[in-house]
Length: 61
Image (cartoon, rainbow, N blue to C red):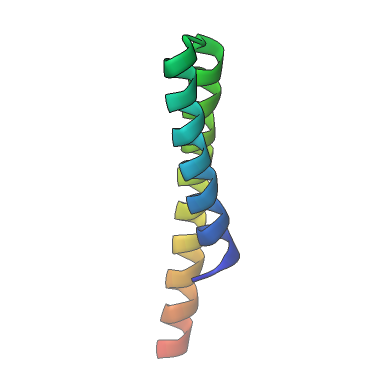
């Protein structure tokens, strides 16, 4: 597991919390920021997954 995978997962989890908090307090702005953070986290995690796959593929050759 690399740093992008970890940071992406943490960012995604924080976004989910922020979205839920926004729903509880009725803040559409917080909900939107939470969703944005989730997407950003998913992208970062995917980048980390790709890096890991490339590293694994290079080890195999």
